[in-house]
Amino acid sequence: MFRKILVANRGEIALRVMRACREMGIATVAVYSAADRESRHVQAADEAVFLGAAPPLESYLNIEAIIAAAQKTGAEAIHPGYGFLAENHRFAARCEEAGITFIGPDARALALVGDKVASRKTAASIGVPIIPGMMAPGREMREFELAIREIGYPALVKASGGGGGKGMHVVRSARDLEEKIEAGRREARSAFGDDSVYLEKYLERPRHVEFQVLADRHGNAVHLFERECSIQRRHQKIVEETPSPAIGPELRARMGETAVAIIRATHYTNAGTVEFLLDEDGRFYFLEVNARIQVEHPITEMVVGVDLVRRQIAVAAGEPLPFRQEDLEQRGHAIECRIYAEDPEAGFLPRPGRILFAREPEGPGVRCDSGICSGVTVTPYYDPILAKLIVHAEDREAARRRMAAALDGYTIIGIPTTVEFLREVVAHPEFAAGRTHTHFIEQHFAGWKPRPPDPALLEVALIAGALALPETWPPSGAAQRTALTPWQTVGRWTIGGEGR
Image 1 (cartoon, one colour):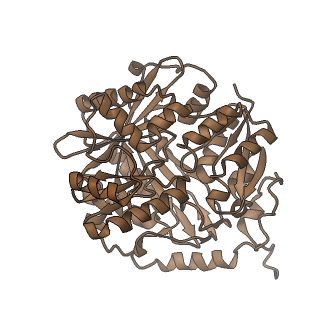
Image 2 (cartoon, one colour):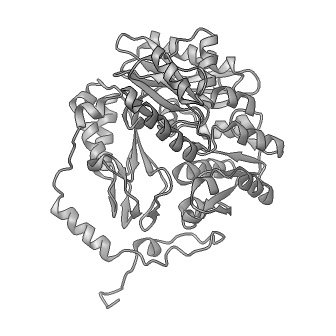
Image 3 (cartoon, one colour):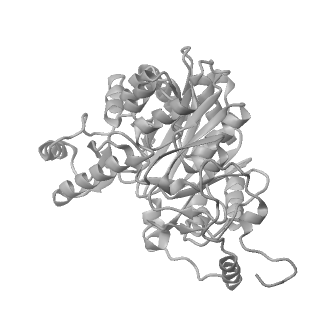
């Protein structure tokens, strides 16, 4: 087993990986940009190495700087988390060249499935139905124009080298084609360091269903059942659940077997997700492979009882999977809500700023994977995800009610977030009935406005503002490892009501 792992990411996923490492007795190395000197993942690691300026291309996408950090600290392996370089086969190859284990599929498999176009070719080669679209990234506008004649409108611009909704744009007419392709290229380059894009037919009202897979280096491969991820905005998932309310045992078995077949065809190892679109008639189409841990992996952990990050590390260290397909089963129901620093009232625009006060919900069956705390500043440079709220219960309705109660108990003051919006999504009758699809938000929440604020909450906000932390906290310098005390996290305080 590894003695030290470098986590090539930030925020809640970096903390999640570090937590698994700590439980396994593995030391961790954080990397950070100029914007993240005071971030929680830097404080949580055993060591931290500065990468560069805030823009991702100068920090979290800087392959040579990350390799140098691993070599400097003696890290034997690198966990990429999700986003950034997680699906970059060049990064995996560079790790292999440097004698560092990449915790994920090897460079060859990653080139096949991490590249969305290559994975489409692989799926088609073994007879899996795919969505009509380009079978190679386009280089010139002429290629896109020829492709659209076959695909037809509406079409979807997609990044070849990554996921998470980055670089995705719906094209509904010829006059928008070039503009949407250029926008997709810009976003893909910024997010993944790769500006290649392709076109795919856009399906209007499907469900988005994905299967979690695990494969080791000894020829074993399993799926850990499905997640339904149909509640999305800007092609980005915001609510996920498992099991899917639309899938019965027979369809679940067929889709799971298809997912494993794709993984075997590419000689893929480690954790990954095979994604499908499911139409209203129960037909499914291969969408893509996400060759990494997913944002929504906790709901699978809650229902199946497998620590996916721990399994990633063990597989990368050469250990076989400790279970077979017949050993795995789903127990109960889990739902995840992603908490973003966004303003739903303003089209989900990111809203960076200082968090004056944060209180996470607690209780039986409630889990919060978070990258924030009171007093931290959310920067404008990266994905605005703050935390993931996960609940588990004996059935879907119990889980839905538990999520509603947990959202009621989630307080973040200082910046707009999606908490209130998510409360209403979970409470919506169509969500309660399980009638979800990828246009659920547009259909039921177009022009959504928050309710007038509770006067009592405004009073709490004023108090939190008065107790806002001084600009000099937390202490600068990534090397500092002093644990945060309650007195640091509550801000300025006095004893006995004396003056400040």
